Structure formats: structure tokens, C-alpha cells
Image (cartoon, rainbow, N blue to C red):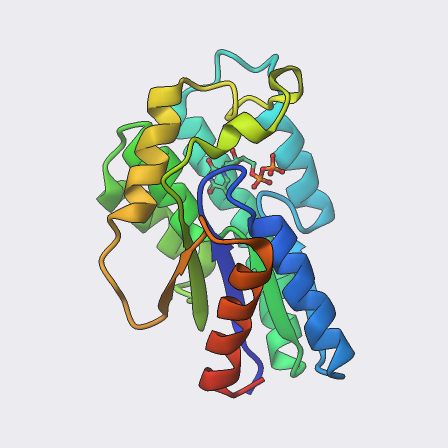
Length: 202
Ligand code: TYD
């Protein structure tokens, strides 16, 4: 059965790099797979992404922000993710609902219950089979030049610490796989592949 695999964690924790490596590895093994990301992943979603991340949009209310992420996710889920899975194609996705709980919930200080409920509506309760949660004890945003920051990256260190703490303190759920992102890229890649191999189903 095709698998819906998501990568979650703070900005700069290496999710994209590892998602790319896992994607390439699955292709090499002749496993049908697509790779996508949030916010974005569809034509409409990429337009929503531009609005959300535009540093000019300083007046954006945090409710608007939460709803735009959820809107991008709804389009992505129903236009791209579910059809691919139904077609027997595995889906690797950078960020999904957990990112909204971390950023719009924990870091912005909105009620987790509210963020969950708009996302339940947006996704029709679709849940990933595998959620890789990258945990790190470093301020990973430092890896990027601050003049290239988007609207979320421009937030304070305290905001990003809340994001990091949220991921670091998550309680294990059945589809959560905690990954020590302090390790080298090779090790993190191997740890992720091991989870997928042991789970089977690809
Ligand atoms: P991402 O594409 O991971 O950032 P980048 O391309 O710069 O590596 O995500 C963009 C930003 O959006 C990132 O700071 C995390 C944030 N985000 C949320 O706040 N909520 C969400 O639901 C998602 C998916 C992302």
C-alpha cells in the first residue's frame, strides 16, 4: 500500500536535504514516489505560499495566517496527495498539519484545539502514515543569511525556540518517528531509511 510520508521540524533542521535523499533512494529502488511541500505543492497553493511568506505582509493577522496555511493544505491534499496515493504512488511531503500546530499554535500562541479543528476540516482528516519529526538542540536558522529570510523566518529567536521546543517535547503517536537531527546528514538519512524499511509497505 502506498505510503504518505511527511517531514517535520524547525526551519533549517535539514528536512529538505533528507527528503531529497530519501526521494532519490526510492526512485533508485524503482519505487513509485512523488515529492512535494507545504505551503505550496499546487498552482493555487504556491500562490497562497507567496502571500503568506511575503515580508511586505506585515499586517497579516495570525488567524488569516492559520487559515491560509490550511487553505493551501486543503488544495494540496485533495488535488495532489490523495489522488497520488489512490494511484499507488508514495508521497513524500515537506511539512503538513504538525507544522501548523508548531508555528500557528505553539509559537503564535493560538489554541492548539482551534488549529487542529481548521486542519481537520482542510484535510478531511487525512493522516500521514509516517511523520518524521526532526529534533534538534541548535538554533538551526543561523545557517541561512538573514537577508534571505521570509516572513516567518523574520520572527524572533523566541518564536523559533517555541517551534523547536514544540517538536522536541511532542508525545509519541503511532505514526510519529523521532529523528535526532543533530547527527550527520548520512546518519539522519540512514535512520529515516531504516524506519521505512522496517515498516515495509512501500
Ligand atoms: P518551508 O517551505 O519549510 O521554508 P523554507 O522553504 O524557507 O525552508 O516553510 C516556510 C515557512 O512556513 C517556515 O518558516 C515554516 C512555516 N510554516 C508554518 O508556519 N505553518 C505551516 O503549516 C507550514 C506548512 C509552514
